Length: 326
Image (cartoon, rainbow, N blue to C red; front, side, top):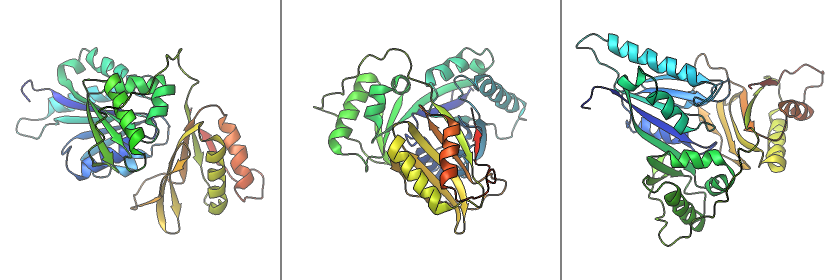
């Protein structure tokens, strides 16, 4: 560090690409020792911060993407960190590194522009690297159909292809070749559950044809399901399985932490693929029994009506399950 500015690592990637899993592993491996972590989540109820307990300092920016709805708040928070650093007395440890994990709906380019065009931030913060996670299982389909996924890849200095153990090698090779075409200067790495694994080289593979996309697809939005502790969990499992089977292309991401007799349970799915549940340690002050569903092509109210049919609560209105996040 020769210019005295704080370094900022921007971590992005489309919905379900494995950003938090990758960052969680980096924190356990002490890759970002002493960094201040900011977690941006589109939904008002944060989930990902519960998984990043190893961070030296962590704060949540929830209720909108840092590239648009929460852009002003992001700038204010970064300015506050700059001010705290400037006021740090001589001889005391000063903040040197910020890691910003964006939501899966954020455009890294817009965030970079917000930092580089702010007269205060540009003098105190240097964006040292933009890392973008790419889902090894769903990445090709996202690049074909989602303009945002392409913009995320094009903004990357480093691409991390995740879930190498879940995708076949032919698809992974074609994905890597496609990424090399979209972002030829980016370094490409691989990961399984956050641990580094060499990806296919992509050599000799034909990149996936990417059709020209006219404008943006329909809006993707988060819906928060606040679950009552009297819910029938067996019925909930049936409901979630049926939902993903019928609307897995529209329901892009499901993530939540619920309390069970065995402890706190992390539930996750990406499109139609449900990940193995994970037990989490107890954490004071957490708002559990919250599921965030992110997708398009349906109404949040319809999720409520559907879930109520499976919830096992007989009295009408006895279960307050749904709160819209946006």
